[in-house]
Image 1 (cartoon, helix red, strand yellow):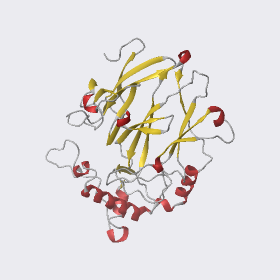
Image 2 (cartoon, one colour):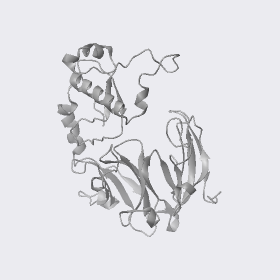
Image 3 (cartoon, one colour):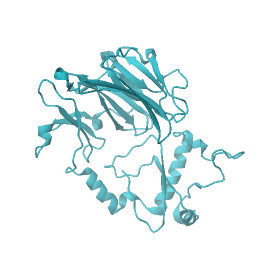
Image 4 (tube, one colour):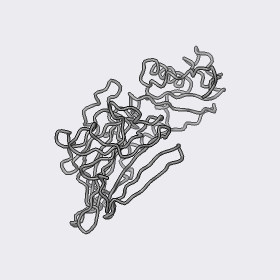
Length: 347
């Protein structure tokens, strides 16, 4: 959630994220893992005196530009985002911005926006999961955050209940109740979404899914873990129980091809060049249930210069579709499509 506060100075902000700390909309403390970088000559001159405005931030403009011959990048150390030097630099930038502009959490705008975000009167956004061919109600899922559920809950209801004045929700996953990440830089889990298992049911309809992949980020970074959940028991499935499970945080894309096969791109341990130069999955593999990830077989590769590559499949009204994608630039992607209805996906 972004706030744009009017100030007497014309200030532009660039935010630089460092994994390790996360603050939900309901948290009133400043997020120390973001460096707010003022880009303004007027701001720079206003903060020239550290005695008045606190520590001055590092200059954003320098003689360096990509490709400059003989000029070292003064911010290259920031590539190691969790190093002591990088985090110290973040603290310096935050202190300078707070000294110059004040704490945004103390403003009326912040309180007004926070009240709206925590309001119980928000309209819950729904995602339909399947149509039960046996005539039962399909489920509608919603991810919800408020002042009580700070990290959020993933819940479901029926359409009839949703349309009533007092919808009845069943909580499937409570992020605040999960054990915290076992890292030194994160204390909470951040929701990165769900990928349900779509299968063909009676009458050619897509039946209500009983499995889903859940992506959770430690602290809110791009990297996340992947766990499979049984939607009927509302419990995670461990690897020992035959579930798909990736417990080491990485930039990952994963989707079901079938009940017992995932299409997955991630940082495969012990292998080189499985990620793009941008740090996202380049190699996509087929991973079968009950086998170690190391046994997964490569089925698609993007280029090292791509931003990312992905492959995913899904069922829709009795038809199975599969896509391959190469994100070539920020604005350009290349797609390939095939129908899986008459194909052996082991090919």
